[in-house]
Amino acid sequence: MLETRYCRRSLRADDETHFQISGYAARYHTIAALGDFSETIEPGAFDDCLRDMVDCKCLLNHDPNVILGRTKSGTLKLEADNHGLRFVCQLNKDSAQHRDIYSAIRRGDISEMSFAFTVPEGGQRFEQHPNAVPLRRLSKITLNDVSPVVYPAYKEGTSVFARHFFDAEARSALGAAMGKPIVAPQSIDEAVDMLRLRWRALRVTEQEE
Image (tube, rainbow, N blue to C red):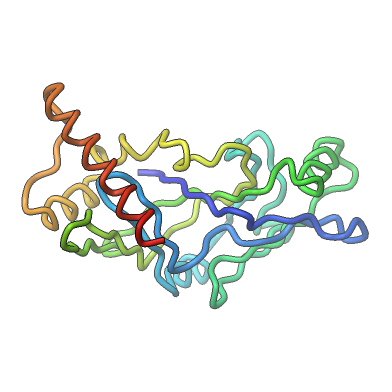
């Protein structure tokens, strides 16, 4: 199941001489409150993916019709350092579309990054914590793309709800951590209970921050 995450204040446009954008598509040790569980990326999670990667694209808003660069052509560079997944994308000065995007990033109109990924087998585990939702630890990630974004996907809660029910490995691991199978709500009462759990997760995260 393809998932997306975002990284705040992690995108900038370099000086116009190089016409590049750079920053972090993901950072380690940050905690994302995703409702039924929280999530963090462990150092080294991207190592296997980067070593075996054939190609990865830099898109705008995860749109395959707006390609800014790709590793296969050498216009996108990806590197995992002590902070997370760093990228540098060389834009094309001959493209009016790229010039507009570069200008929007330089002005700060587009300032956040996102990455789309899947989790390979054995690449995640859940930890149960007292008085809180389980914590999902990602130790291996397979990248699909990195993208400057206007509306970060999980910030708006647009794709996380579906993933709980259709990502079989995540659903199974979460069910084991919570001591009960995770299934789609079958009634209004069950849906309300799930919303209460999401609210509690957000409150716990805010208190920890």
